[in-house]
Length: 231
Image (tube, one colour):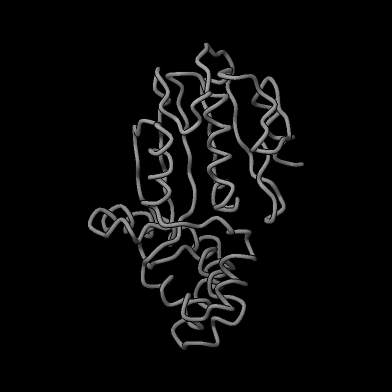
């Protein structure tokens, strides 16, 4: 896989494995990082995956996750008015089978006894990057409303003109920075969250041992939306 080839340039050791059965010793990892992974695993599997991450993480170790959420902002509420389209475009097209509200996602980490160091909701605005608008309003959504058709046409115009696309991205970032502070947390489509494993673990698994660690692990997503990502 391409992601593993790239990882080999940055890490001493790389492996492809089931997230529920990591090939790592108990408490052998200092840091766990996942980016765009947790939204691609079934919600029913998340407890087992998190328990496995906690197993390999040393006491005092950190885990940092960036993942998409089930947003309650207006454009997502509008998209959900069309359940078949939402399932095809928002879920199956990109394998977003594990989307859940941001507060529920954070609550899971806390239930496992992890100590929150930072929890941030992001992408709360209905203003979309052109890449996002292009796929989010595809698959028949453009036929449901004139504004959606015009929005996607504008997004595709920007994608075809790199200079305008860069200027639009700069303006969008500035708008995000100015506006997201006052928008409700429930509007967040993405989350950045960092947690620490306590020196005395209070995880749901009562048999989780205590030990001392050495290595670092990075979690990579799988290519198949129907399977748990690999590490």
